[in-house]
Picture 1 (tube, one colour):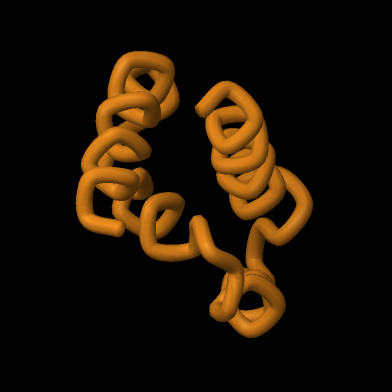
Picture 2 (picture 1 turned 45 degrees about the vertical axis):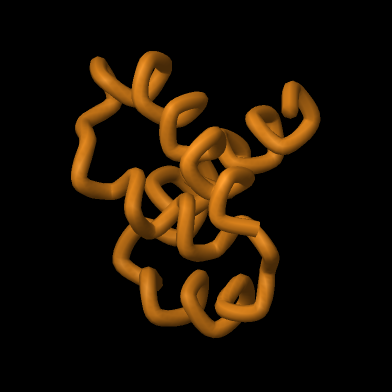
Length: 65
């Protein structure tokens, strides 16, 4: 779980910091990544909430596997 959490947070960071104004490129690059849906769902939450919400989102994701 911890490794998935780091990866999901890293993908989210990359979206907002490295792909700013190039969001479509990020989606093309990661659309087949196993955590893509989790990260996209996390966009509903701002950076203040994500530390609490990402583990919950990952837990939901793993339950649905």
